Image 1: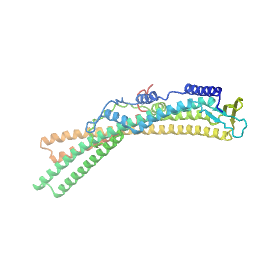
Image 2: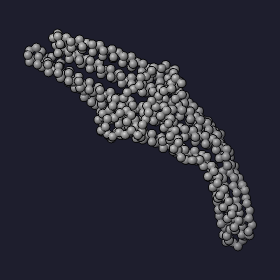
Image 3: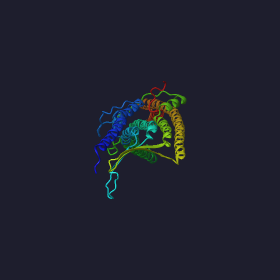
Image 4: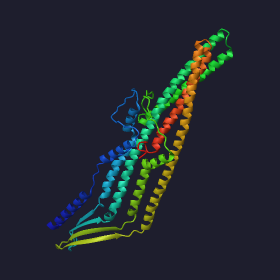
Length: 442
């Protein structure tokens, strides 16, 4: 009634063989090196060095370096992308393993008095993995590469976004200071006008104009307060802490001087360096590997051990072949997916060309505008100096001096606004060519 010793030996041999097969093919699922590769790749293509050990607490002055370090360690999407790397590494380990073997067993119980089979042991193993394994591993490795590139790209995006928003907060804080100075001058002009009107030296219309001008200045000042608050909230959101108090004391960001390059130089560098394009290329390679997985021959092998009540034993080797009726359709689908990936890459290339050329044109235009602003500021400063000298000699009335002072403030405001456009365009252009201009002349 019970299987003999030989059946147990055979079962043990099957178990040991399967165990040796699985452990011999399994790859490591430790993704530590892959995560570090993503970090190293991002750091290589960043315009600044990120020191993640820097700490920042709400209420403290916020430098650009501290904002970047905080953002990198708190960005949820970046953590998600790093987690995907861990998943992809485990999928490579899965791809290197054979198909799961199947072991069946049954015990027979005689109920009709005739001899039968008291024990049946059967092992089945799909063999298709033998010739699909290289393609499966190649596809899994390209998927891992995509995850690494995506995580590095996300890091570059976070850095560019935080730098832009930090610079905006710093700029708006200065604009608010200038707006408050203008409001102070407008109030002073109203006070002098009222004094002159009481002495019969100014009309009611002059008072009305001075009051309207002051109110307009206060309105502009309030707009500056609102813009600074919103910019601070956007910076905090980019850093991953939108719940923190929105009033920020930022330390101005010092941008490196940008050397202008030609469109051709920028575009060739962007095609070589941009990680999103590298991701698209990895997808094409993956799709190419998947063509080999579309319609492989499906073959399985089996070994069955049978022992009946009469101590008759038999080993029955066997095999099976699955005829894929939809094989041509599967190959067509796989080939179509690769073609789709290639066209997506072409479209991405065209988008890069448009983005780089548009930003470069914007940089050139805004630079010229900033140069004109600088000339206006210098001319207004010269005009103010002459007015101050004339006022000291008694040749210039204070009410004539205040409008020139306010014109200088307006000129500085326009210059600051255009300087912000130039700086943020440089950051955007830096991002558009891959994250940094370093190595552009390689």
